[in-house]
Length: 329
Image (cartoon, rainbow, N blue to C red):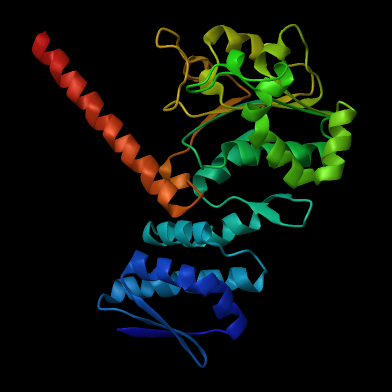
């Protein structure tokens, strides 16, 4: 079966992507073949339903191309998932929900339904927990919203913090003073802020104390009012640290806590404060807990498969352990 979609050459180029990478993703996702024609794109395949799904995705992407939305590999992969699940309409809805605009004019949008739910929760609640694997945009989207809130004058400060806990290397053995020791662990936050504000504006805001990036221990004893506060890598905060952090919230503040409970670097006898806090506070008014999954990974498509492989391995190991426990009993 073959279906032809009428498109202008410029739209075809955007949809196919650099070196036809996007086109190959669509072909692999639906077991079809794409060919450029004089009037657009021909979609061919042995399964008529797959051909129709691929054609639906291409039509949706064509609308995005007309709106000058960036069509990268992650958007194509997520779009294919949405079409397969019967949610093709969500492709345009997600692309039109602009979270922020970077200093270079790039529009930051949600690429998955999970991300949209997370962003909406932050907008509606004073405290939001974003829990999920690497690459789901937890921190990046929170930073984008923080910058948007500051520019709209909804908050007067942006405060970003992380526990100074790391896998494999101890802070005491690293060179430099305390700030130099913890800087590598705060680097993802620096990078996100610089992209949103631009390097010059970012540095000025840091110097004026309007944007603050610090280890979690620096939050003790403070009351943080009219601020957008993000605690990143929260799975490495102890229960005591989490309680200390959450009780810093002052009037007019919004707090986002992000983390991946599958990558806890605390000592084995320490419970993650993120898991406890999310379970304890999930039913309180003004608090939202959102779980992102491997389906929300928007980095290289291989990252999504890596996350899924680890999740499956951990599930199998857990089932094996449960089986041994039952035999012992």
